[in-house]
Image (cartoon, rainbow, N blue to C red; front, side, top):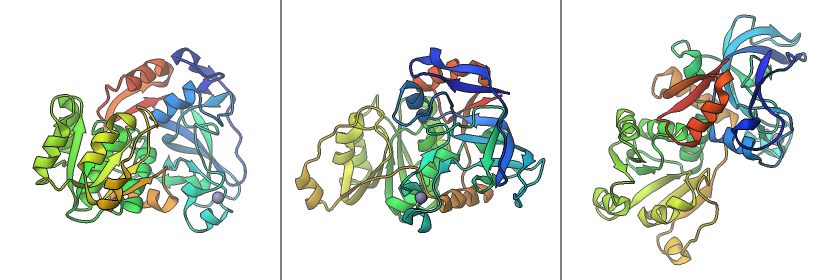
Length: 340
Ligand SMILES: [Zn+2]
């Protein structure tokens, strides 16, 4: 079979669409014929070099496909079933796993980061990582939500605990995680302010239900948010940008506000004025991936058609370098998908 694989870290030239052997399955595993995989910013970081990546490594965290073969102890799936893959890996034994907080697991990981991933033709997957693909979704759509939806849901529902009527500010409406976050916040009855850097991204945000959209390149975000909230600021900020947006985020966060972050794309070092933090009784919280129950709650929302994956563009896996350049240049409004 062929797979998107790196043997070393570096620029897009290290990406290979190359021949590897089809993995063999153990008794609790399923061999999935991958029909679609999604791109995430994680792919770019893994390519460029983060600790813990075993080389060579097949990239990709999200995937969907059909069951090609099952191990002797697999009971939930049969050959031909259409499935999607839950990307968080965990030990199943530590105290966090015991409490259903698998994303806090002492040896947690993600497919395509610390073990081989989904961007290939066949993948051996543990049975409990598979879910049935919702019938109304294409393989591309089914591959286009797991990692970002698990992340966004956990940030908003598990961590920030958004409530009906609250105002949620979302950076990066055009990103995969932003487009899902808008929908989850709307589904929970919140008012949503979303930002983006192009008309296309703002149109998408509006289409997904955002109550107010702001082009951060053209308007003064602080002024606009103050006007929209009568000077009170927002209740929740959905952060994944980092240093570039941090100061603005803190300035628009209201009393009792919660800032939840899952990323530092533009830099990791920021400043906090502690006086505002305690006077306004705010919380700043970190979030990474999501637990398995969060994944199932997201699938439930998809099944009920309350949220939907947003696909921007589909590339063939053999053109993986073009897909990396495209994602790196932030052209996308929704998810970038690759297919074998
Ligand atoms: Zn564990």
